[in-house]
Length: 329
Image (cartoon, rainbow, N blue to C red; front, top):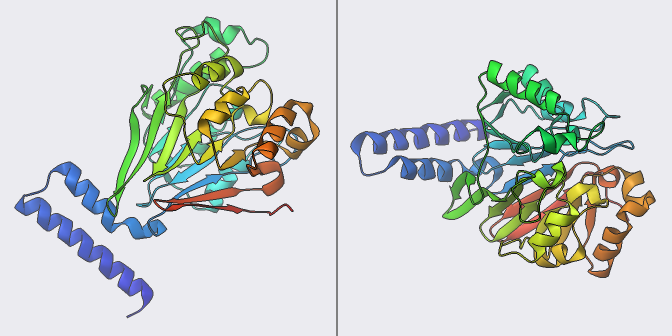
């Protein structure tokens, strides 16, 4: 029998098995879902894949991250691209035939973290739901005029989602956004913390410090997504009770000041850092020198989109591997 024949036969057998179990009892809905996910774990060979998409090929910064779970579920964190590279986020999704996203997470409302959401929907990619964290009120956004968070544009995007009947919601700290079981191993995307810019442990903040901090875990292997976490809240988190430890960190604020202090990275204690930043910002700017020096002193390799192109992280319960599009010696 051909490979495709075997594959389709396995799919039919697994589907039939689940239908039989559902009809004759003995399993809850959650147990059925877990069984289904175990049977589908061959989609990615039991791995969780994170691709830091290169949306910073020129001189401006942005973030866009595709998460693919072992059962084929896909999540996009920060649907954006740089102002001097419009269309790069959507082009990547289309090139890789991404037609359905179970979840989109907007870490915070700066255009370089959400600016291509409308285009992605208009291109026909189905989105089931969107996780957001709005500033507590317009006053937080207005502190950044004429740059930064455009409150009126944010409201127009939310209106667009309502018109398209795409639900959006604000998660809470500790909420599990995606949960799967792969060969008995828990795979999760969960919220570590989030604040609204006014009701915070450090007083009123800028929009960067409204970033949703996420943890992606495959068994004991962990990655921390930090949005554009800023200096003040980052300093507080470094002394907080939150569990920040991770093998891989998505570096906040594109590696540039005013990202969190070194004590924050001490708490995370990453083995590898991923930076969504153009080459000129990462290598040619004093704004990134502190973090470059920190990673060098701690022998932490940094993968940067402007240097390495797309960077893929393959996570399993046993560890992880990094596959850059371009290797830099």
